[in-house]
Amino acid sequence: MDNIIIYPKNEKQKSLLKSLLEEMKVRFEIEKSDEDTLLGESEFISKIDKSIEQAESGKTRTLTKEQQKKFLGL
Image 1 (spheres, helix red, strand yellow):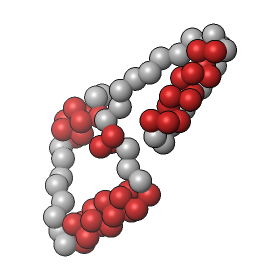
Image 2 (cartoon, helix red, strand yellow):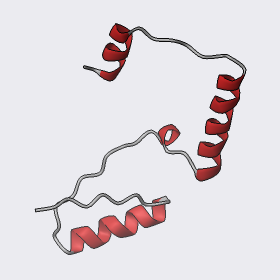
Image 3 (cartoon, helix red, strand yellow):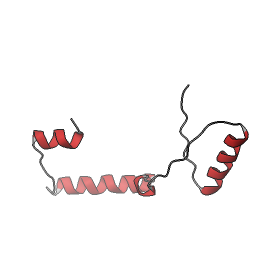
Image 4 (tube, one colour):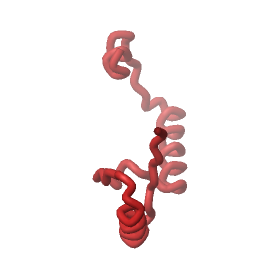
């Protein structure tokens, strides 16, 4: 069976979805998430713009192949 991932925007939506799933006797899990990892569109664009500015001003780092493999978990 396929899984469905739902991202409620607020506590009211979460509560309503939870009640609905319980009423339908659908098995579900609620996981805590770090809100800091979820960016809005404007925050995302701002971070990209900052990264571009840093690259254009030469504020970059070069990684060796070994460092790249370690960073990527290869």
